[in-house]
Image (cartoon, rainbow, N blue to C red; front, side):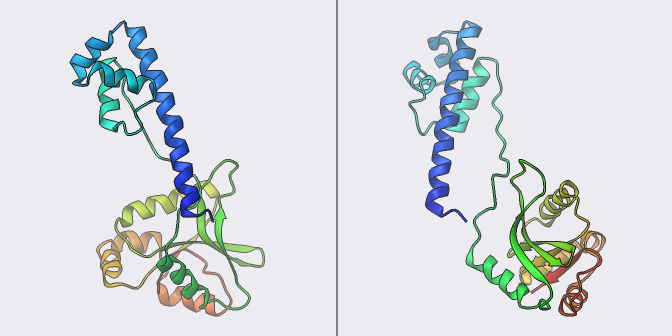
Length: 217
C-alpha cells in the first residue's frame, strides 16, 4: 500500500494540475465574456492583482470560495466531485479487525485483502474477499459506523457493479456501532439477513454464507 508521504505527494501534484487547468479556464472564460479584470475585481471583491495571479496559477492557496465566485462572475459554475482512486489508508484498528475476523475462518477458507472490482478502469476495491474453491464472498470492514446508510449505499453499488451476490459487513464490537445497527434495524435485516452467530457458524464450519450478513467482532 502506498505510504502517507507518497499519497501526500500525489495529492499535491493533483492540486497543481487542477489549479493550472482552472486558471486557464478562468482566463479563457473572462476573455470570451469580454469582462475586464477591473470589472471582475469589483464584482468579486478581489483585487485585480489577485485575479491576475490566480489566472496565472500562481496562488497555491487559492480557496474554493474564491474560485466559485470568480467563475460565477464570468457566467460559469465551478463543480468538483471526488471519485475512487484506489484503496484508502487503513489504520491499526482496521487491520486488527480484519485479523480478528481471519482468525475465525476454517482452514479451507482463504482471505484476500484489498481486492479490486472486476471492472477495467474501476479503482474501487473490497476490503477483503473470502475464497472457498470456486466460490467467493466479499467483505467490507468498518471500525466506526457514523453513517450506516452511506456505508450501505457504497456496498450496494459495489455489489451491483462487481456482479457479486453477497457480502459480509464486518463491524467492530463497540457500544456506538451496536447502537447504530439497532437504530437501522430494518435496513440491516433487509440487506444483511444473517447475524454474527450465523455468519461465524458457517465460516468456522468451512462454508461461505449463502447470503449477506453482519458480523460484529
